[in-house]
Amino acid sequence: MKLEGKVALVTGGGRGIGRGIALALAAEGADIAVVDTDLVDNEYNQYGVVEVHGFEAAQTVVAEIQGLGRRAMAVQADVTKWDQVQSMVQKAVEELGRIDISVHNAGVISVMPVEEMTEAAYDLVMDVNVKGVFLCCKAVIPQMKEQGGGKIINTASIGGKNGFATLAHYCASKFAVVGFTNCLAKEVARDNITVNAICPGIVRTAMWDLLADLWKQPGETVEQSWQRHLEALIPQGRAQTPADMGALAVFFATNDNVTGQAFNIDGGTELH
Ligand SMILES: NC(=O)c1ccc[n+]([C@@H]2O[C@H](COP(=O)([O-])OP(=O)(O)OC[C@H]3O[C@@H](n4cnc5c(N)ncnc54)[C@H](O)[C@@H]3O)[C@@H](O)[C@H]2O)c1
View 1 (cartoon, rainbow, N blue to C red):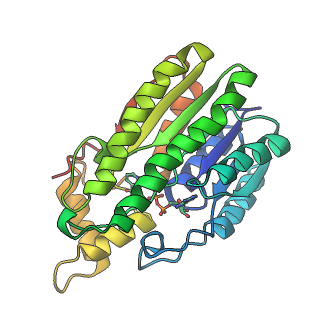
View 2 (cartoon, protein in one colour):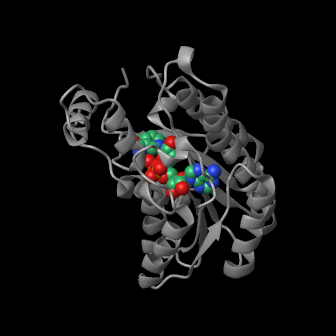
């Protein structure tokens, strides 16, 4: 196992891609702090079609990880709140001893053309997707410096390199994560900390359940809409999985020479 004795923290780890990353790191031997929240209560995070019980879900993921023989803990934190992010790092270090790998994956989406976009929708996407990444990086860097190094992995998106109509705020937030990742990588390079971003393609999570639902054509089911999108957008004709994102996280977590990169894992997808 490549990560035996290491400790990882994963935000948005209660479900979807975060859960896949947490399980992949644990399968390689890492102990895991699974961070999520039940306390974000707004229509965008509820996605209209799924209820978010992130912390409850994080506790289930903890049990799965413990089943693999690793130590794991659930931490409730809203990544947009500095006090909660600071105490998230503190709790993880108190219980698991250190943080070698910090995965900043919590994210939200909503869909609307710019003309109809509300300030609230824009602010929420920016807050969680960009400020959340910033606060988590800010909180974990002193801990990593004290330990002599670490690996930071931010979740961006293929939407962080290409625009997609009705997702201007979301794409802007992910372009920001790509830029932030590249800058920070240079800032902490001499501290033995690498900073990279995962750019997922199309993964069937609660997020894509929402998109497939909103982008249905008349008479189409969510399932048919999902199939149509993945066939139209992904050259390989099949979706990515949370486990695929986990494999890239393991690569970043085990490589000392790759930093500042935003790596697509998307089956060749071109957003259009
Ligand atoms: N699903 C995709 O195809 C896809 C593609 C590209 C990028 N992404 C990105 O991957 C990441 C994970 O997305 P997903 O598809 O697994 O979505 P998801 O909705 O299934 O999971 C997101 C998790 O983040 C948590 N979360 C939301 N706001 C939070 C906050 N303020 N503080 C703490 N936790 C919070 C949610 O509770 C949830 O558990 C996101 O950053 C998303 O933008 C997803």
